[in-house]
Length: 240
DNA sequence: CTACCGATCCCCT
DNA sequence: GGGGATCGGTAGA
Image 1 (cartoon, chains in turn brown, purple, red):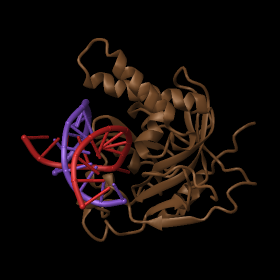
Image 2: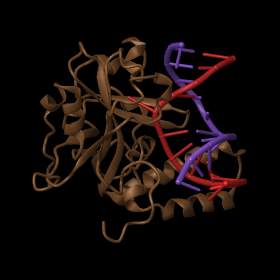
Image 3: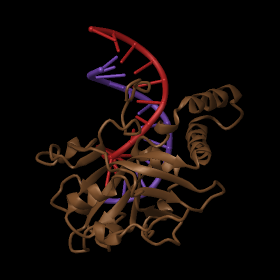
Image 4: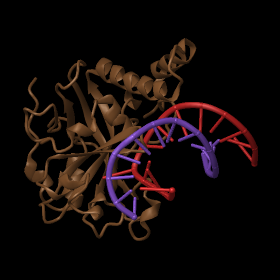
């Protein structure tokens, strides 16, 4: 089944509308490493506006890592955070308004074995660098056991976890996510799908340094009650 | 449930 | 030299 193109025009207007248009869209990893095709549904995003938004990386100006935010909509802005994770943004708005939407959670749909393998690879790479060089078979076995217990719908339940699960590295910054030839791209949602999805808005996560009003503006959008959203979750609820 | 903590590295604030 | 658009673990109420 061919992916349906994601219309770039959806990203070129109002910031909130652009962010909401990404909820339900598909994130597709087509190639770029030895793992197979992976597809997931975007269920949680956050909007970051121009330099006046004191939580937005566009406040650093067009010369640094956030340069893609000052370019055309539909490209990726990828950066490393806290040393060991990466975050994936979709650039939105015209270049005159440097803004982006952070992808915060994705529900795996296809290629779940590959998604799980990519996450395990990331987990093992992270912990290997924390250990003295040499064998640590017990620790590695424990890491593998932990990874095996993660439910399918939690495999990309956070901005760092998306990038681990879809092999998004900083080298992919600037990639045109609306180009079907790209190794990482967006695709439209299933027309028979998403109709019943209720989107809720909350303040953004992890930006207390920005001060008000930026701490409180409700620019985090997520599918209500999605089991794949970020943050701690209990076991699957019996009645949905 | 809340709170805190460490890992790790690149960009700057 | 400071600190972060994270995450998983631990301790305690």
